[in-house]
Every structure is written in structure tokens, then in C-alpha cells.
Image (cartoon, rainbow, N blue to C red):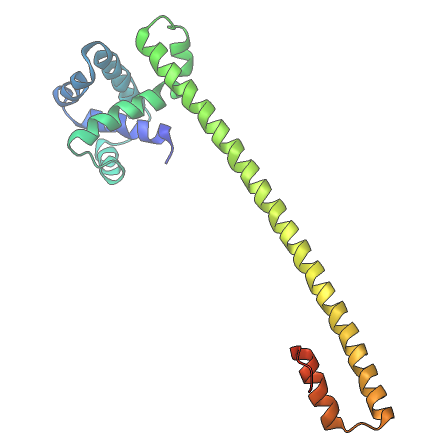
Amino acid sequence: MTIIDELQLLAKFTKECSKKLVAKQIRRVGKEEGEMIYQIIMLLVREELDRGYSKKYLLGELRKKLPWEKSRSIEKLQKVVEKGVLRHEKRKYLLNKEDELVKRIWNYYNNTSYQEDDKIEEIKKLKQKKKELEMELEEKERKSKKRYRETTKKEEKEYRKKIKEYLEEGVDPKEFIWKNIVETLGYKKI
């Protein structure tokens, strides 16, 4: 669910509630800012109703997606308005750059959007680094397996060569096996 979707649901919610309740919540945010936010919300409410949604449908959708409880409601209201309205209605507010609320919200919006871009870049770099490390690890595993195969082939050739030598000398096979085990373990026969 995008910020704009949340904003539209918020606008639908405010239309279904009484204007007194909405105004009361907004006054807690601050008198000057609240009145402006209230006007913005009412504008969005009218736009949504102009699109032809029924009031029952809008309220039902809102109850599913935005359960309003106690103090969370006012925080959600302010955040949604600050993050979504100016993005959604950007061209209107670019004309009114002198307004303090607009300046404050745009500064907040610009700061967070840069941070999000930085985070996305950082995530991409980390993914690239992870990929490189995985490729490096695979390469090392391939090399170690290759070395292991080569060493086992060498050892096998040497072992067969020793067997041939001992059998040519006429040594008992049991004696050869015992000697080979003792040498492998690193002991010397007394």
C-alpha cells in the first residue's frame, strides 16, 4: 500500500466522520497548521467522492486498512498528510513556497527522499559485494576440489607404484599393508 493510497483512504475516512471530530484531532497538531491540513484533507475528500466511490465502500475499506486507535490516529494523520499530500499535489504547493508549513514539510520530504535513495544505493552495493564474495567462494571451492582430485590421483599412482615394488621384491602383502598403515599414521615400526 503506497503513501498515496493511505492518503486517499484517510481522505475517505474524514468524510465519513463528523467535521467536528476531524477538526478536534487536527487542533491537537496545532491551530495554524491544523487548519491548513484540514483544508487539504477536505479537498482530497471532495476529489475522491467526485470519482464516484460510495460512502459505505470507502468507510469499509478504511476500517480494513487503517484501524484508528487513540493517539496513533493523530500521528498517522499528520504523517500521511506530510508525506503524501505534497507529493500528490506537488504543483499546487510549489507556487506557495513562502508558507512555513509548506517549507517545513518539503524540507522533511526532501531529506527523507535523499536518505531513501542512499539506502537503496547502499543495498545495491551490498548485494553486488555479496554476489562477488559468492563467486569468489565458488572459485575457491572449485580450485580446492581440483587440487584434491590431483593429490588423490598422485597418491594413488604412488601407492600402486609401491605395491608393484614390494610385490617384485617378494614382500608379504600383509606386511606391506601393515607398513603402509603405520607410515600413514606417522609411526615407525620397531
